[in-house]
Image 1: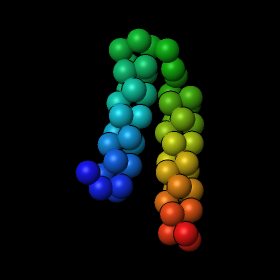
Image 2: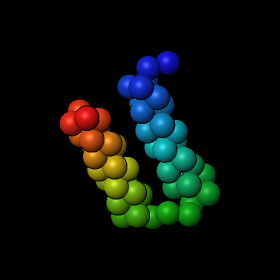
Image 3: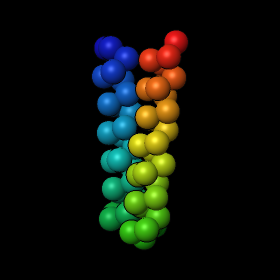
Image 4: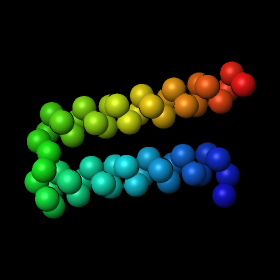
Length: 54
């Protein structure tokens, strides 16, 4: 499994966990869900930028 596939898998699992917390368990509201999605995307972008510079 390549490094790119692992990143996609991790992001998919992250979104799936947010989905279950939001709709199945009703732990998060819409604003918190969107905030966590944005934070996750920013972290993935920062990790990609760091890899490209090395």
